[in-house]
Length: 73
Image (tube, rainbow, N blue to C red; front, side):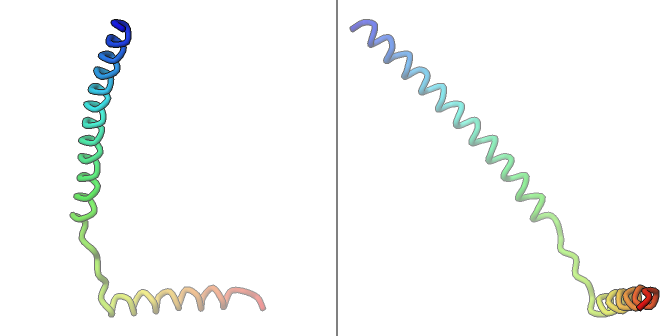
């Protein structure tokens, strides 16, 4: 019986150590999660004006027309 109680004590000690490791891992994951959230929230969206979109679209249409004109039919 003395041997079994020693095994039980050793298992309890291992369980405590595993619990501490899990807490450390959870803390590390929480810290990494906070880093990711900060980087996303700190980034500001870029909005393009309607005039800029029209200008870009017109330039792209001109490039397509130029490319079509060069192709032999």
